[in-house]
Structure formats: structure tokens, C-alpha cells
Length: 340
Image (cartoon, rainbow, N blue to C red; front, side, top):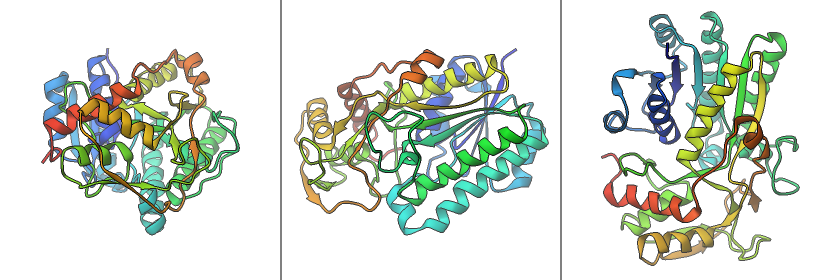
């Protein structure tokens, strides 16, 4: 009998790609989302790509305890994949209370409801932002954690909550996945990243310049201690990331009483200018850009050592930077206004 998986924030960018992989692997999925940073149209697109009779959707905010409790009472949930959170570093610096309230309070309500219904398996969507300004690269899971912005700190606080919960009750199975920089889109071009307003992340920003929605790309800083002066990040295809969640669930099903933290990244860093040049190759256009001042909280270099995830989950990334750019362009060119 297939398991019932609750996915919070399931109509978002990473959530929607993960739901497709879950459905295609035979899981039943219960998706909850308040649609504050996603579109209801995502569900129609998912239905074109996977068995939609196995998908249920509830529009709710996970801070709404009564509504969330109803979801648990109506569905025999086996495990939770928790994506629901605000995720823009710059916005978190400007609006820290918004981030702490949403990302921490909502997550606490979720855990309390899970506890009430005796659902004790969770895969948590964490972030490389918990490493702050790393002393070295590639970054291993045992590196010191220190967040340089409220977004990263909200993830770090909830990681600590999960650690303390597991210490108090060892029947919990917890897998924390620290993502690096998700990019790309489903190869069909039906789903992809559709941010509200001017994008905070590099790839959708480049895509919107290429499609003519934005005149040029702002590059935040050109005097980092890197070969070309622009910041280096570990860009990972969103489908590779989604498959990582599938394998994380498999791991929790096979290893009772787990508490594990894993990096999900390619293990390679690419500079902003490298990404621009790869995207120009993918779309056959020049991407106009200009340099502007650095953003508060940004670090110079950040890329993963994914050895543990490779070993424990048998997980390996499949997509090159060029393929990530090709899939991003395929999505954006077919959907110049996103899901609108």
C-alpha cells in the first residue's frame, strides 16, 4: 500500500517538482499551501505530468492549527516533507519579524500537530544559509553554523528545534536537507520558478532579462575574492533536488529513529558571470547586466561537499550547468509571464 505524504508549501518551486517525483514513484500526496508565493495553476500543470488522482490540495496557512489539524484527521499521513517558508535573503534583512514569525511559528505548529497525530517522520527543507560565511569550501555538514541573515537564522533555529525534539523523543525520524542554489525547471517546460515581482534569485532574474521582462541584470558586487570578482555558488537542478527528497523518504522508511543532516549540492561552484555565459549559450542571446553594490548578508563563496548524501542516500546529481540554463530558458520562453 502506498504511503500518504504531506507536503507543506507544495505549490512552490521546489515543492511542485518534488510532488511530481513523489506521484510518479507511487506515493499519495496531500499538498498544503497558502499560495502567498505560488499559484493555484501549478496544480493543473502537475496533473498533466503525473497521476493527479493521487494528489489532494488544501489551501491553508500552516500557522492555522485548526485547519492543519483537519488535514491530519482526514488523511492517514505517514510522513511530512516541510517546504513552507519565506525564502528571500534580502527581504528577510528588511522584514525580520515577518520571517521569524512565518518560518519558525508555522513550523512549530506543524510539529505540534504531527505529534498530536503520532506522525513522526519529517524531511525538512533547510538551507546552506545556515553556514553563514564559511571558513573554507567545499562545505561539509560538520562545519560550524552561523547565519548572516534572518532567513538563514530561521532555518538554523528550526534545525535546533528538531535536534531537541529528537533528544526528548527518539521515536522521531528526522532528515534535514541543506540545499545549495536550486535552479532549472521540469524538462516539459510546464512548471518552473515563478517569483513575485523582481526575482531575488539569479536564474529567474537572468531568464526574465532574456525574455524581455527586465531590461538588464543587476550583479550584486564585482570585488569578491573570486577569480572574476563575482560571487560563487553551487547551483543544483531542481529535479536533482526533488529526487533527493524521494531518496530521503526511502532512507527514513528503512532507518527507524534517524536524525540526519545532509547537504544537497553538486560539489562545484560557479560564478555569476559563468552562469550568465552559460545562459547566453542556452538561449542564443546576450544578457545585458550592470554591477551594483553587494547585498547585506551575501557571502563570497558557497559550495557543498555532497559526499554524505552520495553515500547514505545513493544520490548523485545528473544535470550540468548548461542543462540547468536550457531548462530554465525552456520554462521561461514558454511561460513569459510565469503561471499568469
